[in-house]
Image 1 (cartoon, helix red, strand yellow):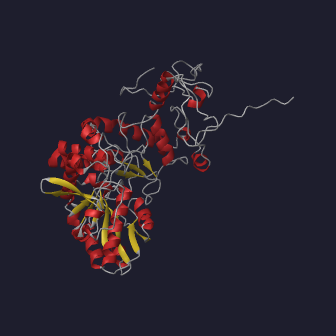
Image 2 (cartoon, rainbow, N blue to C red; image 1 turned 90 degrees about the vertical axis):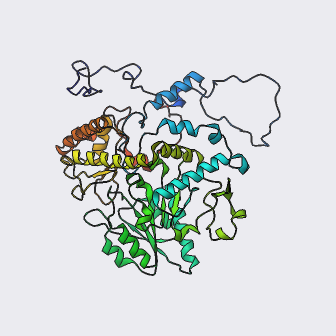
Image 3 (cartoon, rainbow, N blue to C red; image 1 turned 30 degrees about the horizontal axis):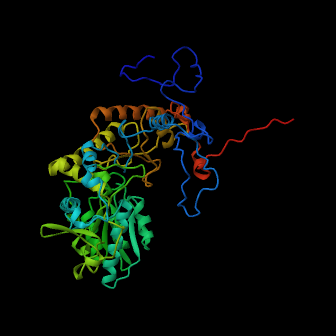
Length: 523
């Protein structure tokens, strides 16, 4: 196979000789393996493990024994290991290459963080252990909380929320409690169009009526529209800053002042704090509550259904209403303030968010990240994230429509659209073409304020060489899309599976394995 001048193979699916490549007996294409389902590898009549022969032991299941075959195939250990290893090689991961998902901050997780999180004193503890036996863990939680308060310029922090949306709910419950304490039952939360999609969902879940605030032509909150809607029924505003267009809200202080003057409170979605950490303190902008996604700003694992963590920082106005439990230093030891020990000085707390105290593994990873970087290093993290995003924006804005490219520098992510594509091609076709280039697609069709949106966040952990390779792939596909190249309609061509019927998959998903129906020939 010939190489192109840059050294990259032009088409892994192309034939190496004249004509089409011959089919293989296995269905494999070199190391692109055709992996069957686990049900197709083994059978239900065999087992991969032989149990010891011996006297039958009385059942302890109390009548809950299985009364029919379980229907799972029996595989030996080598079969099982090989099956899942082969499947893992078909997954894209941050350890394989750049992960350009916008608004998700899929960046490299330093292995130092993982090593510290696996130390027995952190990894092997139990939430019901006596407090005296976990002083080191509680001290770490308290230290991390101190860093979060200092970095945000806020008054206090609740460490127990388990994820970003959970943190949003925590903040709104504190706002509701503060308003009720002054006898003010307000019903409306204002949410700008440029906010994260979880914001209106969380407000509705908390029992508020949600009203949208439009964006202006520069992709920021329309300040006049916000001010005109403020009134005695508005409990507050949920605003994302930097917003989901990848832009900083320059009117943030004016927004906070207007909401406070109208008797409301300000919730900030801090999911994009990684773009401003070490440079802007949200507390200085008039924010009353803000959650922080530890996985986005402070590099802990993200995605895959794993544990999350969304601590919430509060202004002085909301501190008294923060949830229990929390860690408090009392002399030379650390204590957990619970309902039974909260006393009169914490009696305004709205209650609990979780059964226990938060996600210890995420706390440990985040603390290792913060201490290894230091204050100056965290400032560089945000600077590099913004630099990389602007590099992507300026390198692609001549071949892709950048709706807010003229609105000044972007922050941590660059936003494009499918405007100008020919032949009926769309964002989806470009994303599928990117799979053929060996990249996971960017975030598509979000934010909703841009038609055919493509949101790209390169993060601070990518080198210029990695960005240049990604940019080259994007430019190639964008030029094909603008020319109306219909081959993109069939992309991906080189993946283990071709393009799926996504509508059918969403409406009629196949969630359980069933034996294939064997057709019988008519007599």
